[in-house]
Image (cartoon, rainbow over all chains, first blue to last red; front, top):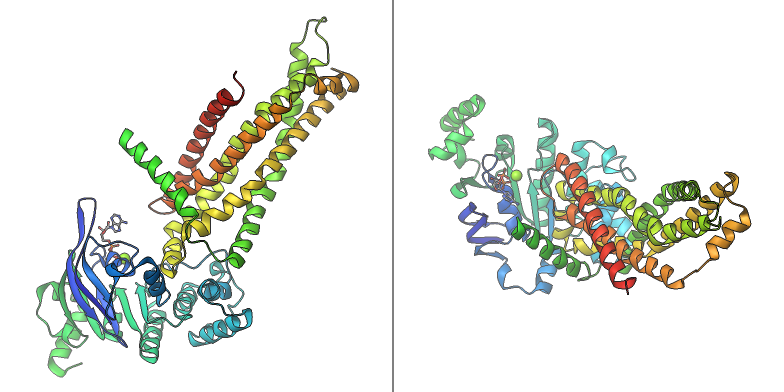
Length: 255
Length: 248
Ligand SMILES: Nc1ncnc2c1ncn2[C@@H]1O[C@H](COP(=O)(O)OP(=O)(O)O)[C@@H](O)[C@H]1O
Ligand SMILES: [Mg+2]
C-alpha cells in the first residue's frame, strides 16, 4: 500500500502537482487517469523518486520516503518495477538480457539461476520467439511484454506503469491490461497505472484517481465512475459518444 | 547568459563527481568497458590512420615547396614534419576530429537513452546511471594516447614517403631531419595534452547527452552543440597547457 499525502511539485514557476493525497492499495490495479498534460507522469515519477517533490509525504507500507537514508531508498528501489510509456528497453541488449538485467545488477544469482527466472517470466507474459532478439526487432506489443517481464523479474512489491497500452491496437491493449491485472492479483502487488484510455478504466479500474489541473478531482472505482455526476469526470469520460451510451446503460441496469 | 554558462559549468563538475559514486558491479562494468573500447577506440583507428598518413604527407610536401632557397638544408623537411605532427597535428587536430566522431556518437547514444527514458529506467532500478554510462567511456579513453601515438608515427611516415617519393629529399636527409634537435619533453608535452583531451572527449559529450531534454530532433541538435563545445574547450585547454608547459 502506498499512501500519498498532499504532494506538490513545480518545474520553475509552473506548478504541476498542487497537493495530491490518496491511498493506493495492494493487490489492486490503481489507475491514475486524466487528460494529456494533467500531470500523470509527473505524479508517477514523483512516487518513484525520479522527481523530488517540493512538499508532502509518500509512504511505502509505512516507510516514509523523505525519512529514508540513501541505503534504504536503494533497498526500496529493488522492490519497485516500472513499465515506461515507450517501454524504455535497453536497445543494445537482447530481450533476455533486458529482462535479466535487474537480477544481474542487484542479486548474487548465478547465470543459470538468472536464466531460469528469465525463462519463467518470459513464459508468464506469454512472449514467444523473442529470447535473443533486440528490442528494435519486435513489435510494440511484444516490447510492452518485455517491459512488464523486466519490471516483475525481481518480484516487486510495487509496480508502476506509465500508459502501458499507448501505441497498441485495442485488442492488444486489453490483453496487456489484463496481464498486468492478473500479475497484480497473483503476487499481491501494489500496482499504479497511468492511462487516459477509457477501455482500461472499464476493464481494470479497481481504483481510479482522476487528476485535473494538478489536483485530484475525483476518486472511486469503475462502477462509480459511470454513475458520478462530478462534472470534471463526466466531461472527460463522455467526450466520446460511445461512453455516453455506456453511461445510460449502466444507470439503467448496472455494470 | 553568463549565469547560464556558470551554472552549466557547475553542473558539469557535479556530474564528474557523480561518475565515481556508487560504482556498478565489476562483472557488469568489465563488459561495458570492453564495449566502449570497441566503439570508441577500435572504431576510430581507421579514420585516424588514414588522416594522419595523408596530412603528414601534405605537411612534408608543403614544407618542401616553401623551402625554395637552395641554402636551406633539405633535412629541415623532416624536422618540420616531425615538429608539427608531434606537437600539434596528432594531439590537437586529431582530437578535434574525434570530438566530431566519438563526441557525436557519445552524445547521441546517451541522448537517445535520455529521451527514450532508458536513463530513468536505470535510475528506477537503483543504478547510478552516470557511473554506468560515463565511467566505462572514461576508462576506454585511457587508451586514447595509444591512438595518438599511432597517429604520430603514421604522420611522420606519411611525410617521409611523400618527401622521398616526391623527390623533395633523400631518405637519409629526411631521417637526419627527424632526429635533429629532438627534445624528449616535446613528446611528454604532447602526451600530457592528449591525456587531458581524452578526459574532455569522454565527459563533455556525455554531459550534453545526459542532460538533454526533448525528442529525436533535439538529440541531433545536442550532438552539434556538443561538438562545438568540445572543440572550443580542447582549443582553449591546448592554449593554456602550451603556455604552462612550453613557454619559459
Ligand atoms: N521534466 C520536466 N520539466 C518541466 N516541465 C515538465 C517536466 N515534466 C513534465 N512537465 C510539465 O508538466 C505537465 C504535466 O506533464 P505530464 O505529467 O507528462 O502529463 P501527462 O503524463 O498527464 O500527459 C506538462 O505541462 C509538462 O510540460
Ligand atoms: Mg504521460
